[in-house]
Amino acid sequence: MDRYTRWSALLELLARDKRLTVEAAARELAVSEATVRRDFDALAKQRKLVRLRGAAAHHSAPAVAGLLVSALPVASAATRRIAGTVAAQVRPATVVGLAGSTLTSPIARALAVRFEAETTTDTMMLTGSAERRVGVTVVTNDLAIAGDLARRPGLKVVATGGVVDGRSMALAGPLVGLLLQGVAFDSAIIAADAVDPDFGVTAADELQADTCALMIERSRHVIVAAASADLNRTAFASVCGTERVDALVTDTGISPATAERFAHRGVRIVTA
Image 1: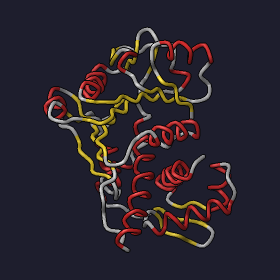
Image 2: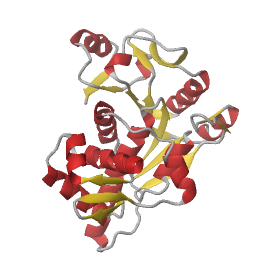
Image 3: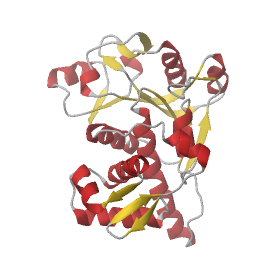
């Protein structure tokens, strides 16, 4: 697990538990306690947590942002690896569209951890201070994600318009298209419910599928993220065909035969 993936995981655990010991974090992430101590120290310098003796505490957030962040699920280790690998595919100073399934939350956090660390380090080297510099612009239709990312240095966050789904905190409907038609993306990151070499990328919700399709239409490069268990299957609504997918990020559970089928369609497979 790389540093940025670990940091993202630690922040997720702290958002859930509010306080985390070094011993518990090391056990959860399967790393040494010395590694956790270094990570806690680095995140404390960025004011992302409060360092305690042998532990760390969640950094208090504004009330509204805290409510939104509480809606974000805590990811599994496999999901965090996929998210970290997706974040590594994104170039600095680009515009990224992010939409799709529950994988969007860990991907958003991985982007935040990577770019806030990189931009803070780069800026301090150049100026001697930690002033804000935008590392990447993220456009999303998820209010919980937007609320979380808006507090992170190194990211510019744009939320689409639309009607709020109270269960998922996602924005949907015709208003989403009004903003997306005026935005050009360097990359679209689509967290897919299902991906099949023949049927392409699909989503369980037709409104979410429409949003993903619009982002893809406005993007130069398309990255699809999906667990290997969600490959070779389809969901309800079509998002795009595999000919539009540049890279598929998944876990090591993908079979050689499935990888070959995607490669035959021109899709680059990246395993986490």
